[in-house]
Length: 585
Image (cartoon, rainbow, N blue to C red):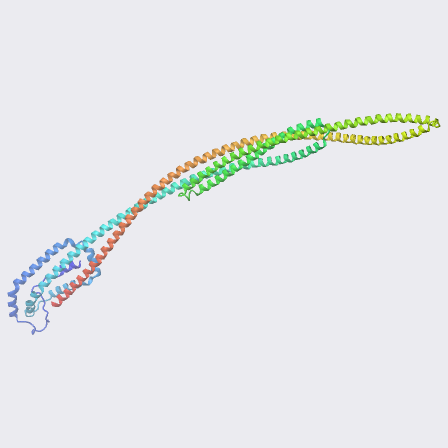
């Protein structure tokens, strides 16, 4: 607008009658004669009028051509007017001064003659040049301002569109994040439900294990009690074997029964051992299942934090399943080896039974020898009694002979001496026989006492055997109960194993479903990652475009600054020209 004021307010060269003189107004000594001024006016007025008309026409044409451009440069002109108001104000003030001077009252013609002669020839060409320079500068500046404003508006529109795209992309990103978080929360809720189900199942399994352990503990205690009873019975049986030597038939009967019962007890012990081994193996299997369940619970709890490690976790789970299968195979191999050991132990037991039969045969032979010795001692005692009777008879005969010999002592003293010798010998024989008889009687008494003691012991042993029979019957009933309970436990354990297998199958199915879900989540993550990559690429492109736009803006601002500097220099030059013009005027 400053140039607009300059063009419109810069008046053309005033006519000679209106221009003021540069000389002072007072005094008539400085004025030229009226005759010279009149002749100059009459000679130069046509040429001056023609120059003035041409200048006015040029000004009008340029002003009409510049009018469409004035609207485009109003904003820049206002900014420049605010920044540099001095030049325009000076020009407008000078124009106002010229107008005020033009409106002053006319002085005498003598004062105006000399400026009329010098003014038109010195001012008109400079004014035209200044007007032309101002018009060209204003046109160039207006064109530059228009193009810069158009580029600025285009850049602002592109920046606004890019910001709108960024907002849309951020909204899409937020929607994708919300949908992905919702899906993750749903998966977490499902996983928590599954974990609760697994915990409930584990609690039920642990309760069942606790009950089974209690029953196993009670069974083990009863088995230990039975073992102690069996040991006591074995000790008693050994004592009975040592003491019962003479009672063969009863002992054989009792030993046969005891053999059967011991066989039953050994079989029951073997069964109990097998049951305990099976229970231990199943407890180990349940522990492994509980450990695998705990590991799986840890895996389920850590699924939220390790989505990127799902493949490794799946491989670990598969390796664990393989290890469990290997453990099952090893357990089966151990069971087979234990069965072989049991067979070998049964063979050893049979060998021991054969050795026991051989020992019993030896004991029977010893009993036979004892019976033979007993019969021989009885026969010897009967023989000794017969010999004693014969000796008594002989003694009676000898006494008769002695009496006859005493009566006939005179006849046969020699025979008496012989008879005395025979009596001495017979007495010694009788003494020895009496001593032997006493020894035999002592032996018989001791044997009778031993037989009495053995009979008492046999009665006691019979009573004890009756008690043992009763206890064995009780043990058989208890063992039958234990066998029933063991069968029930086997069935329960088989059911638990089937349940565990079903649970493992459900776990495998759930793992397969989890693998599918993980594959889906991975696919969704890949899709979202590709979308994020595309969005980031678009964001990077937009950032690059924004950087380019900012660079263009910086270049435009630099150009505007340069143009402002140029305009300032032009304004200064114009001011200098105006000052020179005013000084010249």
